Amino acid sequence: MHICYIADARSPITKNWISHFVEKRHRITVISSYPCRHDDIPGAKILQFPLVWTSWTNSGQSGLSGQTLSRRALPALPLSWRVHLRAWAAPLNIRLRSNALARIICGLKPDLVHAMRLPYEGLFAAAVSSAPLLISIWGNDLTLFAERYPRLGMLTDAALRRADGLHCDCERDRKLAIARRFSEHKPIAVLPGNGGIDTGFYFRLERELTVLRSFGIPGDRRLVINPRGVRAYVRNDTFFKAIPLVLRQVPDAFFIAPGMQNNKTAERWVKSLGIGGSVRLLPVLEREDLARLFAASEVMVSPSSHDGTPNSLIEAMACGCFPAVGRLESIEEWITHGRNGLFCDESNPESLAAAIIQGLKDAELNRRAAALNRDLIRARAERTKVKAEAEQLYEQVIHQHAGGSAWKARQRKAMAVSVD
Image: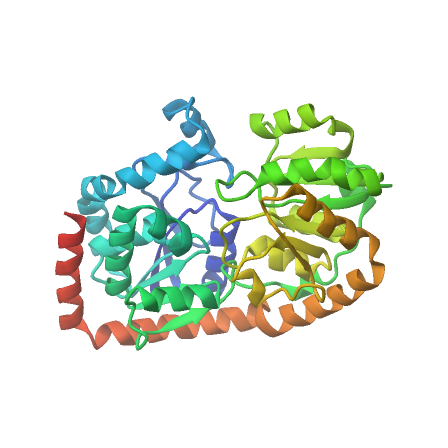
């Protein structure tokens, strides 16, 4: 099978997902929506096709050159403004680049195109590709982007009509996609977006002092980790304001924040709150290093206002790290309050602090949650099972496309009208 991915080739999530299909000896071409190295995904052919304005919202989550591009392009604009500007410009972006992308895909003649994100890779693919098309939907694609920005909402609906199949990372998004007129008769699968958890690796991890020392983290402190980095929909203001409240009751707590090193806003919070001795801002980490920090930490926090199934959540659960997270419908698919994690109000520092403190102080709750969460990972997110279901989904999408040529022609016409 020749699979063409449209994705950010730098992303660890992209790499983990695609690696399985490389191992299965499928022919893999990746059209990268961000500048990347040609060897970022061993075994895959990478074609660079940076979408216009992709750098405007890049906050360094995936590392590499996009961060430099962002500073050069719009150095004065905050992240939220760049998100708004990019959403407003999306229809023009598609019109400017669609012919070039269409020529690339047509020349490749893939058996399947998989756009690994709806905005904006999926919107592009739906506008230009006549090949069997699978689109991945992430946690804020429908609840944030499609709802907040009307033009993106129209493009989203057209892309859902065009797609031959969907991959969602939570059941909530499956329901929302069908409500937005994605046909429930087409293939759809709810699978972790990272391709699943390698339990042979994650379940073996333990607290390692050498790893902590390598990141300048004291080995005699009780660790709390916020792995979400800098994102427009993560309430890091709540996170930092909660830290002094936790320290009053758990003075030996220490807070780790990967993906926030050199972020001016995070640095201002640490300085203004006087918590520098209990916080370490780290760079974006490789998946293995992040997993080792999960294993060394007692509590993982995610004060998010929009989400599907965060990959960092299930990775932390696999390592026995106790979740203290915002209450969202998608997260309730994994967490039961008081059993295998605690919910908080992501906008309220006192609420988040209370969840962290209980996670640190209630050893029995922490122990029970760790066992329950590993059982959940085995049942719903084990890598071998996820990959087998993903491969089956690919075959279903190709079959669906083969039986719907006339239907798709009508939908491409509708897509053109929506973009105009």
